[in-house]
Length: 105
Ligand code: FES
Image 1 (tube, protein in one colour):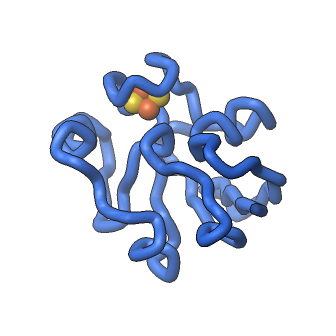
Image 2 (cartoon, rainbow, N blue to C red):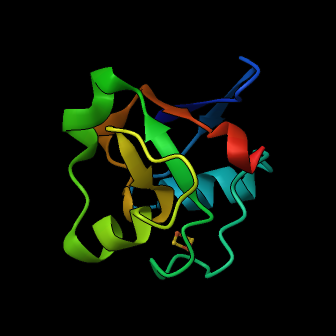
């Protein structure tokens, strides 16, 4: 599946992902700026915060309780905020569009 990451300045990075990987891993592996992922994907740092494009919000799913709580620690949460380590790449997410928060850039 292909995932597009869009910087706050509008630049996009189109990445080839593997099913089962987290969106965070895809970003880190490909050096997408703005995804620090300090905790390595344990849902404990919130430095992998992203905005899911509204068109993809339903497909990407809703945050679980733990993730929801971590999201309250982000500087600029929005309606489609997710922790990218908690989104698993699947065929259904082929074409997924993810925006990087300006605060992390
Ligand atoms: Fe730490 Fe996602 S990598 S919460």
